Length: 221
Length: 248
Ligand code: HEM
Ligand code: SF4
Ligand code: FES
Image (cartoon, rainbow over all chains, first blue to last red):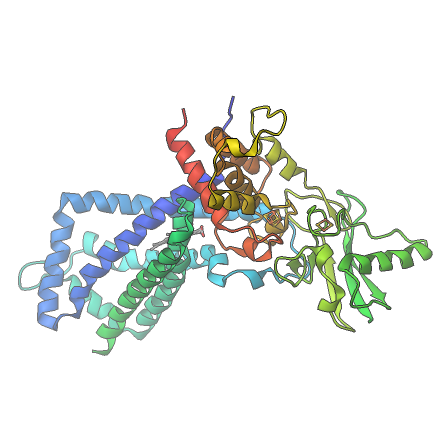
């Protein structure tokens, strides 16, 4: 009897779950990257060892496949809802002051996401692809020298700027995204509203500041 | 005071429509916004021109008929106020005021400032009620409900179905309207029984009517004349997710 054509909330659930998985992944990614703050020799040895260890681990392999799927799923469904929402919105107002009543990042998740997507393509090509599919020189321990790739990349100022801009976009995307996901999943009790806001801010600040610090540190050290 | 008005004129749903300029003098600050439009219409009648059509009924902020876009904001510049409760003291002599109908693909313009909100009725008809026939009003104390629950339910029930939430949402999402109804009924013992079926059918209908999906910008709560809480959207999502998992 019930013909279920409804998709909006289901699409949102997919965006929320994939988005939250990406949030979780960012924590792991940042923790790994903190090794880049070590003194140069130690950083090189340890970071290369770590990268090597990750690419051999079956658990990490599974997680990376979930990561690829999440990224693709997140972007595809984000595109679907954004297109649908534009259609639903129909004709424009001649005089529009609706922006008054919401935060700009919450209205521009699609644009922030597109910046992230462009960043991710560059990021995957320069690190992921280079590491996996090209012959890199090896360090003293015989591990591929990814650390050198990092240092070389961030020695270019424009590259650092590109990263910093992308991380700012990430910050604004996370700030709305984390909170929005909590609502999509149905956390409705007033008791948790504040806690989620505070946690979202804390999470966003730590992740964004952490990622922003790395290129700057390497460029200017 | 004297005002310069730019008003959307459209003959019917299929015609194109345009903004038309009007000047009006003799507006006092005690007039409501709708009375100002009445005054303008009187002058149009005298000129044998077609009057500007707009919806209204109670003019006391409870029926939800009067929503229009005033200077780019749903129901005008004041928070939590319907158009009929907006008074001209919120404007000053010489102001230019843009007046447009609420816009959304699901709300076609009927004429001028009047829109077709049948989509809301269809959503309510799909499940926004209790299935049991209730007969006479029963003894109120026979079903114990806590004070807090009654209040929370009543807060959600205060929605007047004006459509400002849709009009102000960049996604034209009806989530606040539907969330309010879902919350209102899901909190009460009588409504709980059909809660899963209700949320599934109403959300389904909401999608079929062509409303967009909520991205939690919270613009709706800021413009809602009844101050319906965005948490009712989260409550709807909660009920929906629960229904997806446990539905038989
Ligand atoms: C590191 C990468 C990313 C993370 C951690 C992330 C995280 C999130 C989260 C948690 C949400 C909230 C889901 C919800 O509202 O229920 C979200 C929403 C969204 N994301 Fe992302 N995202 C990322 C990348 C992207 C990319 C690459 C795009 C676009 C191509 C994108 C576009 C969107 C859009 C349009 C929304 C919907 C806005 C909303 O519902 O409020 N995101 N994201
Ligand atoms: S939720 Fe508020 S803005 Fe939306 S229809 Fe109800 S009263 Fe109007
Ligand atoms: S005319 Fe009834 S709410 Fe404004």
